[in-house]
Image (cartoon, rainbow, N blue to C red):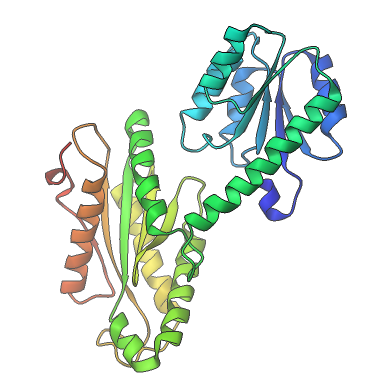
Length: 313
């Protein structure tokens, strides 16, 4: 989100009436970065883009996709479900307001609106979102390496499995392990081991950088990446790139039988998710491929061949 980079929070205003857009822009432009959309379809295009807004002010009555449907679609997708949505509408019935909250809206403002009320409620929800995001980040971040943790992975993988199942696209998982890491700790000490983990994690994290891709620490010296819409061939290419990048760090490892520097082994698994299998099948398959990579000499990449034989639903 934009505030995390020291910028103003970003708000998307969605209304098909130019006058309403002008009024809301005048009320909020000093404190927030604003984007506008005059249709539900345009709102979805912006929300699903690379620069996801922090909050959406959403009209209900629009000519193409109404605000209720926009809210439903945003709250049903892992990429956008955390966006705070405030309905701002001429619909004043209790039933309409209840429907908005049931769909996941954070607030409901009726027209004609008071500029003071709109500004105050937007501020409150932005401040709440900032605090919530900070707490979520802490809970889902590995304190040593500053990348995502195992808890984050366990929550992310099922969401991506369902996302790829709906869209019919491939999903790949890479399981990575630092070769002979115990020997590294024994030789150089745990302080150096921690610094090694940080360097390896940050190097891999920089290469796994598309908006829906995930990288995190799985546990100990093991890391995991989730790659939606990436088939096995592309996943293997990325895995080999990651292996080479870690080796090129040239972190001395005199106790390794593989190379004089720190290296990693990688297991790759890829499939098109279906309801017949569990997301855990992909983790198990990638872990099995990692075992093969370590057994066959380490500092290498291996592709799983048994994804569909594991963890049936």
